[in-house]
Length: 193
Length: 167
Image 1 (cartoon, one colour):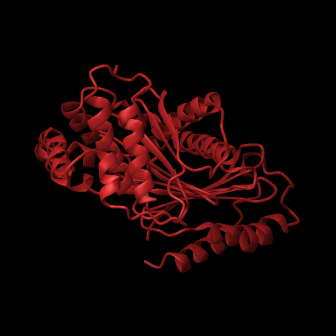
Image 2 (cartoon, rainbow over the protein chains, first blue to last red):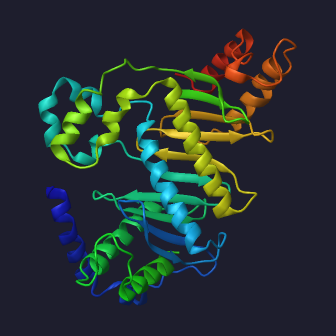
């Protein structure tokens, strides 16, 4: 619990140290390479498997209708759960925890829980999934060779925490309609891409 | 590099061959995991507990469901010529290869293993075709796995896996 309480604070400090929101940051550090293709789209799935956010950055992949995207989000949510239950071997921490069951409580809960799909690779694209502790899933579709997708997703999670979670008009688990978040994500992805 | 298990599914969605390596004892982690999960997160950790009920066949069915859904998802997202290659979770990595005849080869390994698409393709070309398809005693289809698990195929698979995964 302490970790999750500390994090937003750190993010906030870091953001202030850089001086400004995501948009002005993109002006400060214009390291975009015009030729390279960045992430093609971002999806956010709530803990019930519903698609609550969808943003396209580049026209890399097939255009899907919003209905198809909803189906895809639901399917992925289900497969993500199944993929946790077909884990063939216990997680690395388990052999030690079997002997000393009392110490397991002190450990970070994320190391104990079997994680679902983190990366899915296909011939044409790569899908990176980041699940928060509250089971919201961030899906980023990128090129197969895109580096540091992990960091990009963490940063998007920070933006989500800053602009969506701190928005007093946002209802939890409902579709995200927040212009500032749109702009921040766009700006960040354009710089990183 | 560790290999956990290997499955072949035929075009009728049936699991025709299963092989597991490095089997763990039946109940090492199961008693601990639900307890620790329950004390930390009260909601939604039912999956590790539900794992007790799963048998070998259930595992194969779940794996088939997973690859079937993901294959369709990949085709829808990346176009008809796109192919699903692998996915990775925190615990394992699943590799996938599908032949033009819709025979599906699946291998579960640890997370550090590189792409095994070529390995699966070689299992198909050098072992499955040689020892199962070309076997005059083996039927054309393999309902219930009849004719797949013959001695030559299993020996070939074992020696090939020990070559690829030197321990």
